[in-house]
Picture 1 (tube, rainbow, N blue to C red):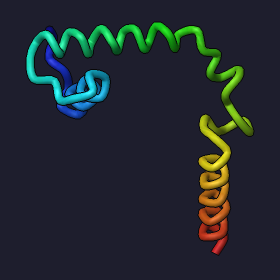
Picture 2 (picture 1 turned 45 degrees about the vertical axis):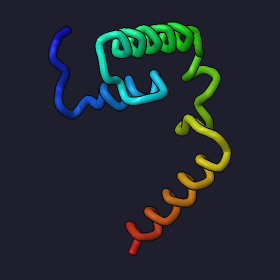
Picture 3 (picture 1 turned 90 degrees about the vertical axis):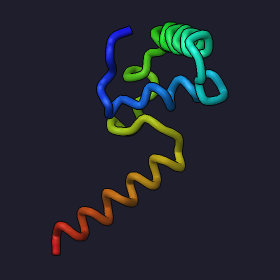
Picture 4 (picture 1 turned 60 degrees about the vertical axis):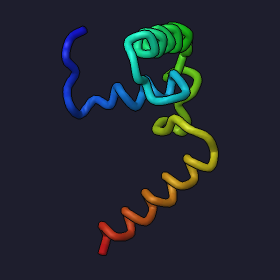
Length: 80
């Protein structure tokens, strides 16, 4: 396996996919295969065409409202 940049938290991702911290090569290979499968399932998602909301956001209503409020606050601060 090639080395990964220090900033890339593959251990955390693999642990998330495995449901526990990865402690051996068998668990690592299983987590890696889970990642490949997860990406393959998502490759058919039309994210930008179907999920982009208000031309800016990917997320649910609560997230969008938080981001809009944050933008309004930032605009108000910038105009002072």
